[in-house]
Image (tube, rainbow, N blue to C red):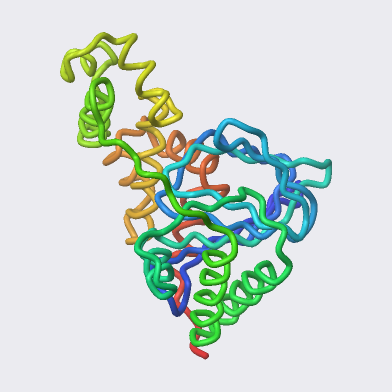
Length: 279
């Protein structure tokens, strides 16, 4: 997909490693809204500069570096220079990264210590893996992707601190999240949501934003986009996806989907349904 500004983007599935999606793109004017992924994000900046907000700060990723975003973390993205940025992205599912951590003898996936990694060897592995997927070379692509994940985990992570279980307001937030995910097509009002979980609208809004980085209405749209990705990848027509998930119409789906993924639903679906080439 290429537009008049020279922006282009393509999504596809990894040909040899299930649970990994890939993006190759150049953006100039496109701005990603506040959103999350269910996957890890490892983005190799090939030219230009990407700027993204993440964990309460603005990060700058110049050419040659890797931008790292962990699952369910709210982030954005936009150009840091007039010419924009060009990058290659790996989106491995949590289970894929957990398996790589297990290979290294880690009991769980550690937390990544740096959000922008300057490591030429890791960058070279990510680039080689990404290019191998474009060629449809399943053996090389799967081998190089695992090697890249192993190196990133071994060199750029640190042990996680123990997290306390949900208590007090957090229980209300967890229950509210479950209710919203169950009612994507017809979400309750903030007042109804607060009453359902036994708290006040103001207290719920404050706790929800603190927990998720998004207010409930933005959280709903983010979850809708994540589910839309799965439905589109299964071949469900975009118009049907929009109706099932509670978007007002297909253009409403397109607007939110592109702001979060960088491509419209149709282009995403075409890339995900492409028949992988044989090596």
